[in-house]
Length: 68
Image (cartoon, rainbow, N blue to C red; front, side, top):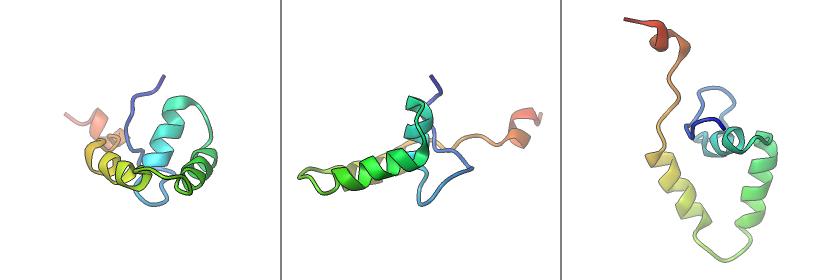
């Protein structure tokens, strides 16, 4: 499984759904639909999204990975 990070490519807002989708091996659009549908249910989904946006690290770029 991939590390849980917010990717630089394929983001729509914060990259949380794209990062979760990559982690679990599904498409980002499927994860976005799951999130939107889950927001119709009672619970702290939106707050969890904001917390993940703040806490998940951003994926390192390829240029910084090869830099000294």
